[in-house]
Length: 407
Ligand code: MLT
Image (cartoon, rainbow, N blue to C red; front, side, top):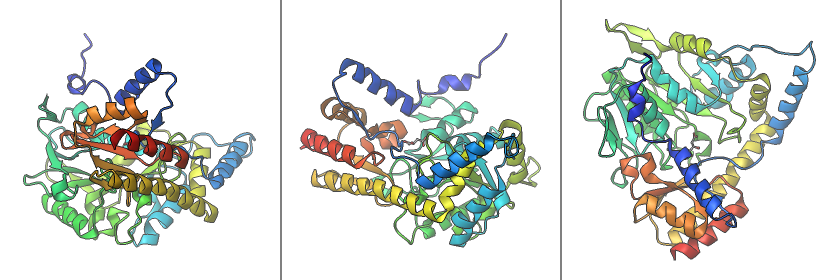
């Protein structure tokens, strides 16, 4: 008899963004005349940078001729992309990361979800609340939690991110082994200083723990003093893995390309307390379960680092951040408390009422989709998240409708 992994039965009925999409679709069917503006899931709306498109076309043409055709590529990614990343994203900022410490993948969602496979089931996991649901759900699937009771899974250490701590969680008071951090944060848009991040690195070293640092939104940082990478912090190479993505920074949500950095010194421990390097293990997993990102997509990603690519992505990011500024201004005028939107494309707003109630109100009255904070965890109750990813015209239209609804 085939038996099911019962951990899946502990999961909430559906993934947050699928649940929202379903609700929006039901609403749309009932009101086909309504024009809906989506400021919910952080999905980009603007075209890929011209430099990426031309590199993409060129690479597709190469695939059309036997002499330049490419079959399976290296599972870890082509050297041309890994080298460009190491140079521009790390070495240029004083973070010593080598190209062979970078693993190209098809998304930070997959990488942040898959990485936990390397660790034992009794790993004590610390997860922020509110949180990007992938970190949580994948640990539930792996059996590292008990049941979902009163809005939380038993057996996990939740790191509350609230107004009281400026949405940057404090170090856990109990010992943990695996720590998920995301800065600039999804969903709150909050940021972490170098000093605060150094405390986490220090903690991980002392406790022999590992930090999984999701930096998918680093390109949106405008405050020069903030760290873009955890490897800007001394000692982080031994205790941190970092995840990055081209989804939001260069419009690759539909094109799919991201990467994970596993420094050679980064280690976990075996049952005899011997240090075991993570790099060869992640490499082993990657080679076994993944066949690489397509050649044209990697060429398109490489073009982000060209001079034109850099200028074009900068303009793209600035346009979304202009939307974020408009959202912040409007919510301030309407008298709502919020964080984020300064160094991140998300604005986390105190809804003053139940977050799903606010979601329904905005959808029904304004035809605007937001993300209810409760979907990101217990501490998200009473908040909603607005995303800056849309056209300026749509954001302006959405804000006019929100003003009309909330005033
Ligand atoms: C979000 O809206 O939180 C993100 O777009 C989800 C993701 O990146 O998978």
